[in-house]
Image (cartoon, rainbow, N blue to C red; front, side, top):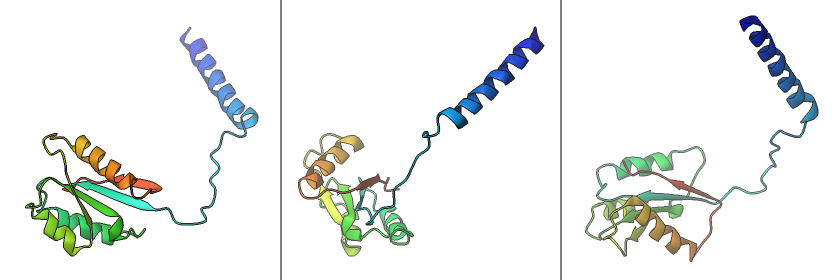
Length: 131
């Protein structure tokens, strides 16, 4: 009985393989060549992250696909946060929270994305943790 089940499994797997190769020929992803580089935005929620934000910004500058620092947005809760000064040195946009009483990263991202979409659209959005 076990041998029969094993043989049936092998036959079924072979049939599935042949079906996927012969019958479903268009089941492969076809990529189109982009005519232009995508506009990339990087969002960084940074609540009291002055210790680690500079390393992250340096890392963004060193990437092989270059993202202009004007397309990097750091979200902070207070103008007194030392993160603001570090971001200014790197030419990064700083977004100050309007509703800091909502103490979750999701709320910070929601506020920032809504503010950015009023001004500009991007092709790709990346969210990095500040530390």
